[in-house]
Structure formats: C-alpha cells, structure tokens
Image (cartoon, rainbow over all chains, first blue to last red; front, top):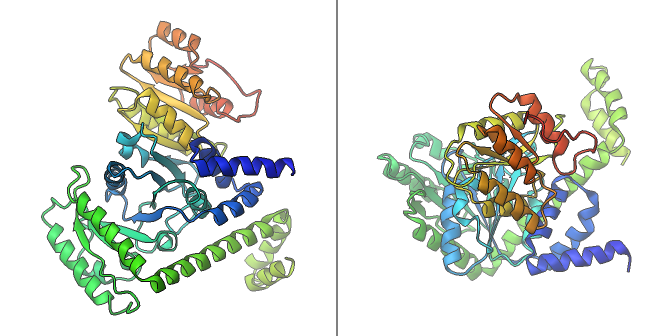
Length: 320
Length: 145
C-alpha cells in the first residue's frame, strides 16, 4: 500500500468516526481546490449518504441563521447530531468576506454534537459555494443525523439548493412584497416547507395567505408531487413556531419515504446534477491549467470582432 | 487578486465585552484586504472561540478588547495550546494599557494593536503572521510601543 493510500484510509476512518478536526482540514483543502483530495472524495461518496440534508434559504436578514439555531436546539434535545454548512457571499472586488452566520448560533458553541462551518461563496452564483457539493460528500459520510445547509441571502433566482437538499425550507418575511412577488417564477417555487419569520408583524397573515394561494396554484404544475408544502409562522428570536416547523420537516421526510418512486426520482435528479457540476468544474480547470497565455491571445481578436467567441470555444474544446 | 486570498480569520469579542464597533471595523478592513472573516460577535467564551477556530480551520484569531478582560485572552491562548492549535496566533486590539499589552505578549499573544493603529499595519501583520504565511514577513509585537 502506498503512503498516500494509507493516509487516505486514516483520514477516511477518522471521518467515519466523526473526527471534527479532520473534517475541518479537509473542507479547507476542498475550498482551495486541491486535486489531491479527489480519491478521498471518491471513497467518501461511496461510503456516504448518511444524514438528512435540509436546505434553509431566503432573503438576507430574514432570520435563516437564527432559525437554524432554534432547529439545532430542537434536534439536539432529541439526541440527534447536527452539522451546519453556512454560506455567506464573497466580495466581487477583493474576494474577502464577513461570515456572520455562526454568531447567531452562539448557544451551540460548546456542544460536541454540533459542527458549524462557515463558507464564503467565492464567486458562485447559485446561492451556494463551489465547494458545497464536495463538503456535503464529506459531511454525509460522517455520523451526523441532520445536515443543515444555509444558503447566502438569496434574491429571486438562486435555486441550486434544491439539487443538494432533500427538503428545502424557504423563509420569507412579512415585508417580502405584494401578491405579484408571490406569482413570480424562481426561488419562490422551490420550497418544501414555507416559513414566514418575524410573524409578529401585522402583515404576516397576509403573507401567509399569499403563499398558500401560490402553493395551491403551483400544485397543478407538479402533478408528480402530492406533497402540499405547509406555511408556518415563526419568530426565531423567541423560538415561536419552531416545534411546528420541526414537525413539518419530519412530515416532509416521512412523505418522501412513503413514496419510494418519488424518492428515487429525487436521488437521480440529485446525482445527475452532481455529475454535471463536477463535469463543469473539471472542464473549467482543464481549460484554465497552463493555458492562460493562449486564452489571452484569443481575447483581442474577439474584442475587435475579427473572430467570434463561438470559434474560440470550439478551439478550446478541440484541445481537450 | 487580493493579498489576503485564501486566508481565513476569526474576529471576536470575548466574555462580557459588548463593545462591537472596533471588531466590526476591523472585520471590514480585513474583508477589504481579501480575507475571509468569521465574525463571532459578543458573548464568546475562550472555549467557544477555540472550538470555532478548529471547526472553521482559521489561520489567526483577532480579539477586540475594551473591557479589561485580559485574563480571558490569556485563557484563550492557553486553551489553544492544550488543544494542539498553538499554530493559530492570537492578536488583540483595543484600549489596552501598555503594561497590560506587554504582559499579554509575554503570555503568548502575537501582537496588541492600540487605538490609532493604521489599517495597513493591521493587514500587514495579519498577512505576515497568519498560519501558513511565508516566513520572513513576521513582525512580532508590532504596534505595541
């Protein structure tokens, strides 16, 4: 056995045991895009699939992190071990970031049954980080019962989370806009459970009504899915509505488990998306590696319109 | 690409220190230098900060101190050592008297930045001393005099 393979086995065993330090170091290497971790990720994928992956998404300041803190508490009281992957945006100018999700989860800071990792989006646009898929491969091979993924604060179009999480919790606030916002396409369609947080606001009931109407209309578009997403009112800072939310998430998982055909469909969708994601990533790297100069040479003719970008891409693909 | 690319640090208050403005400004200064900052805010015990440092795999810890809580900063340094994370330097900033700053340095704090420290000197120190930084850039204790 080579040294590399032996190290890999040691790492694999440590992760399967739930070793947090090994996990943290590996996530950093994944974020750096180290190709050397791929054999390990291959083994982890085959060993993985543990834990329920739940996505939490919604606009900035809606209360995603605070609500996640409540959810962690509820699951910890049932003895479940919880991992959180919390993503915040990177600056498009400097690449820097202020990752401010963990501070809302301060009460779980000393709990051995909780792992929280903040991650900067590093230019990824779908609401997650490029490393999120691989990070989930790691977390799903570890003994976490629940894996929560918090997206960046989203706008209308960041729907990647639905390809990574079995259940998506979509947060809105009572000031999310009028009924026209609720009929638009995009992220508003992807919730499995809808939450109206800050529900002490007088407009909360109106927001709930609009969401319910949207869900009722939307169910005709997805006849393959007979799950009726519930709408739940919460006040994350007080823990109001959290028990109902936990029940709704459990209910959604129970519903999925009761329909093996639908579960299989979701798993194939997820695998298909993951393969596409890795393919694009690898392609991107192959094309960039050592070819910067060549690409530079192709830019000027495209700017002056002597050449078109389609030809450049065809040339790049033919070099693979 | 910024100089801080790929570096990740914690900025936190410690104990009951509720003075957040300094920490938030430093978090932003570091962000603008391309660094990823895990901002922990207030009410963090040394143990929580050590756990966060391990889980987040950070390269440096910055503590904003405006509440004479030097004992807790020393506890943090000791706790990092006990957890095999002594390669993560602890930097402190705030209205720390000079004799206290010297004591903190003696106890293993990498640097103390008093009021009036320039953004450039903070960034230079962080980039030069964060875990994995290129040797030779180190300017230990800068800002103390």
